[in-house]
Image (cartoon, rainbow, N blue to C red):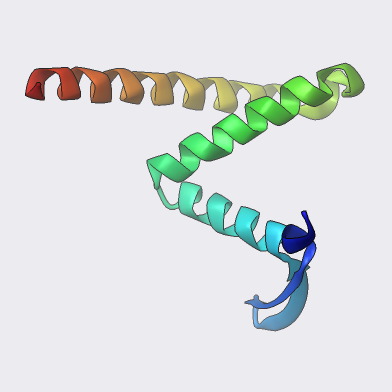
Length: 94
């Protein structure tokens, strides 16, 4: 935890700012996921699901609005289809 709390300098939107290594790591993960990196996306979904299950009792229904829930559900469904396809491709090569 001490290492994750260490500050690093980043350039963002032409400005230099200090953020924690954890924040920098999360920014990189989100950027990779947004650019289509499926592994990064899978990690991000797992983190969101874990965070939501931990805080579910402490969060109002407004945590994700309805459009966000629909997008999230669609992404989970597509990711599930991708994982099934990957498993089928691997079993064919065995």
